[in-house]
Length: 174
Image 1 (cartoon, helix red, strand yellow):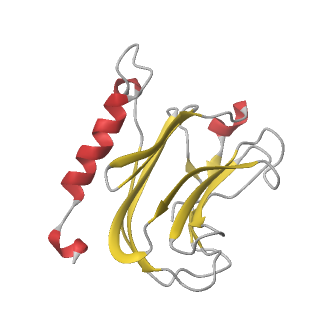
Image 2 (cartoon, one colour):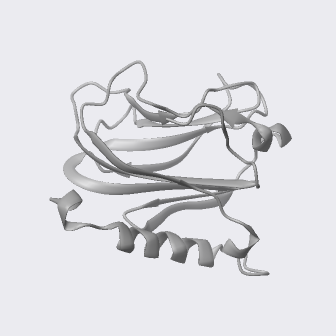
Image 3 (cartoon, helix red, strand yellow):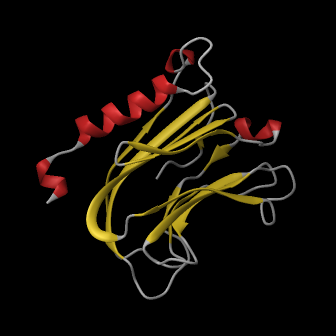
C-alpha cells in the first residue's frame, strides 16, 4: 500500500485493481480505504445489503468522517470472475468504472481540505477479503483529461474504457 501517498498533489488521483472473489455469507469486508479524518476519506468495501456487491463510499469532510458518508457507486462483481475497478478523483469530480464501463460520473461536494490530504491507502480492514486482488495501478491526471467545455467528462470515460481493454490479459481473466 501507499504510506502517506499525496492523494491530490496535482489535483487528482486514479487507482485501479483487478478483483476476483465469491460472495461470502457475511458482509462488511473492506477492499481499499483511506485513513478517515475530519477532512474526509473514502472506502471500497462489500455492501451491507448485498454480499455480491462492492460499494464505494466518500467521506466528504463537510461534517465528520464518521457520520458524513455517501454511497457513490456499487457493482455486483463478487461472482467468481475477474473484474476491473477504477476510481478517479479529479479535484471535485469523481468517476468510477467497472470493466471499462462508467458506473458513476459526478461532481462531488467535498471539503476544501479534502484535496490537501495524504492518505494511507490500506488493503483490507477489520474483516478480511478472501478473494484475489491483482494489478493495482495508481495514476494522476492533468487538465488534458477533460476536453475544454466538456461537462460530461467524455474524454476521461473514454480513457478508462481504453485502459480496461489494454489491461485485459487472458491469464488474469482465466
